[in-house]
Length: 350
Image (tube, rainbow, N blue to C red):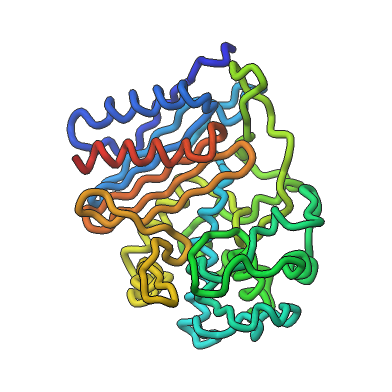
């Protein structure tokens, strides 16, 4: 098999895009995959209630396994929106308040975190540093909750809570621990019971690299020559509720559909999640809960992106025109899926 060859699966679930969009999107995706050296990609689009799904290339290069509708990808930081949703479920039930100091729910938290609230973790205003940059971090070591907090506590806050907004995986991992401490359940068990199972998201859960997962895609990076691919050679310690989720396009479209109703979250919770946060000085910033809030022309764009070794993912939602786009890839750089998603959005919103 030639490294540049892209097998295109032709399963097209509901061909309901306006005339001419299908070919335009296919050409765009194929060109970007070739340019960015992406082995395989799954695409899902919902526009005004009509769905399009496409699969391109290979889930596994060694055995020439094509990407199929049930191919499972790592989705990285897109996990955060489910973590934020779990927190909102607990808030709706009165089991926590967004204004709670996180030390209330994290017994081993250092005193330096006394002013940080649950909402600071959600909005990226906590000041807690990225755990992967901490002294003593080991790329293959799994950490308990106490070990994780101890690792973070070594360094001072990067800024005082509410002074700046900066997304870190540390904050969302801590939110996952808060869910576990309140519910006395593993985060993934809670997410399955309250989110995945009710929506029929049967392929979603923890990526757990030590477990055999049916239809799991392999992750690839460029080789040194840049002409082909290699299997990824590293796997971050379990990012838990910050980024260790696996899913499919089908599952993520089920999640997207639920956001048009109150099946999982109330309207008030969803509105709060999609509202720009505010700094101490009253200035708005672009982080919501588990998403970044951007604008394209006159439209609000709720953007969720993710990247783990060998995977790139993007989930975009434009509420007003009723457009949602899911792109899951097993290669390319960290921004590949997002670049493709934004280009597709431009086709619909021009």
